[in-house]
Image 1 (cartoon, rainbow, N blue to C red):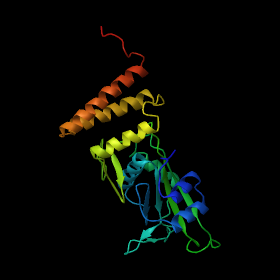
Image 2: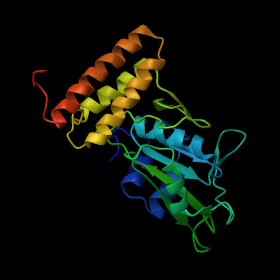
Image 3: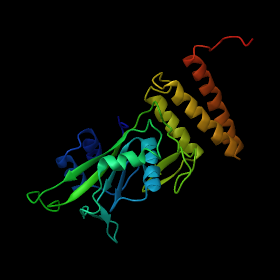
Length: 239
């Protein structure tokens, strides 16, 4: 699933139907990196990559295309990946799983063009991380402190960068979630609810901003009620 307002349209077309043709169309008509699209010349450090995945997932889904460089003037360079830099996609996905919450949906796809492909794709190889957006689970938080990742942090995209969400951006995430109609979905398991509550406690304990702390407290109270509903103990009197 992806956010309905993903831009540009060529990216949305690719995400809904990730084929060689739609990838070519996207790369030939791309307007640069956005909240939903990132380019990398080669695979990067896994913690940096996980940070981008969390940010794109929180922003509505999208993709990271590996094999696309950047010229000095800011324009894209469709260099492709060498055989050495073309990694096993299953290995990439499995290693990323050590840095991401289990409910983040992503996958790596290979796009190999042979000698018959039109320029500039002739004999080029690209790999694309496709990152889905699911309003049931946002905001996705970091589950580890290592490298570029800080435990409990909520990352979002801001143009070409992946940064920690401000209070305003966090509100945007929640409003988008509510708009999607899944703010209180019952599809989460009890373990997932409890994990989210643990992250909220950690976020509350590290904050110094009074307004943000009060916001986290309200979210914690609602999450506690939601867990009571899952356990079918909501409304029971304490003994």
